[in-house]
Length: 166
Image 1 (cartoon, rainbow, N blue to C red):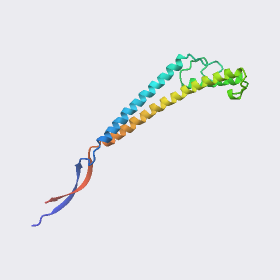
Image 2: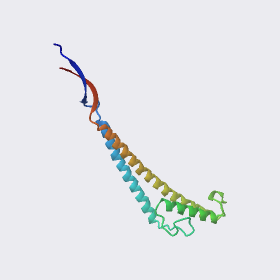
Image 3: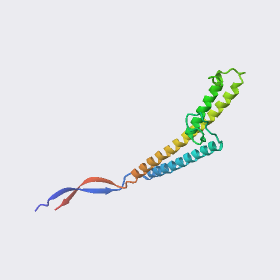
């Protein structure tokens, strides 16, 4: 008698043909780097806030918002810089530092206002950098987690033909 051969398919589990240890390590480094970026962003934010708070700057009553409040963050710093500019232009008759004659006694006041505004805008930029660092940290954690997770897939499943004799 003849022997019948039937072909069936079965799932075969194979180990990955390429090493993924480096990829997993990159994922973990991304997560660690992300955590560090978030920490640095928070530390920078707190540092700028403490320095602004230590200056005891109070927003005047004629400001567009936050009247009577202390400058302690990016929005209040912007409001304070705006009202300083308003007062400087009022004192100079609408002229900027560069437009005033060199012998004008108001020029020193306008220059001081310009320095104060520049300092406040620097703190606003520092807040932006701190927020950017923290945001990039969140993205680094998400990308690192995704890379690590993808590299952690331990097997490849391939459909293979199997013959058996009956």
